[in-house]
Amino acid sequence: MRDHTKLRAFELADALALLVYRRTVGFPREEQFGLTPQMRRAAVSIAANIVEGCARESLADYIRFRGMAYASARELEYHVSLARRLEYLLQEDAEDLKNLSVETGRVLSGLIRALRKR
Image (cartoon, rainbow, N blue to C red; front, side):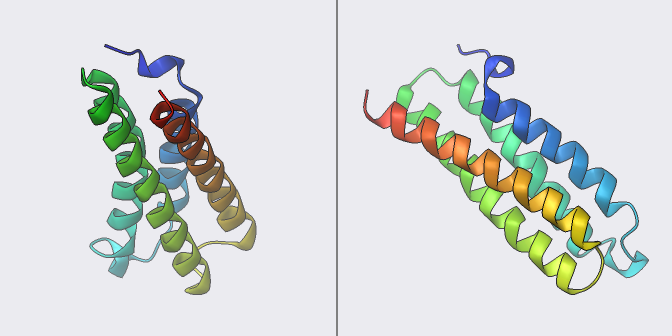
């Protein structure tokens, strides 16, 4: 089994999940069953898939869970964009979330490419 805590991708994903929770606290009440949980779910899914992938024995599963984490990072990028356009997020907060999501996705993508070369 692999130790997820040693991965830069996990560190970024964990920081992203915390930041999403902090930035969505002020979303309108009518979004409590809409965009708020969607963003939180996507952010937590990134880190959770990294952790679950590390617990898998096969390289194929490890890569597959990295791919799911990457897809969740891209999904979150859209949610952030939507939240900004709806004016639920300040420009600076949206940029912080987007940048961290993009960086997380970049690290995951690099890890996936490296693993596929094995």
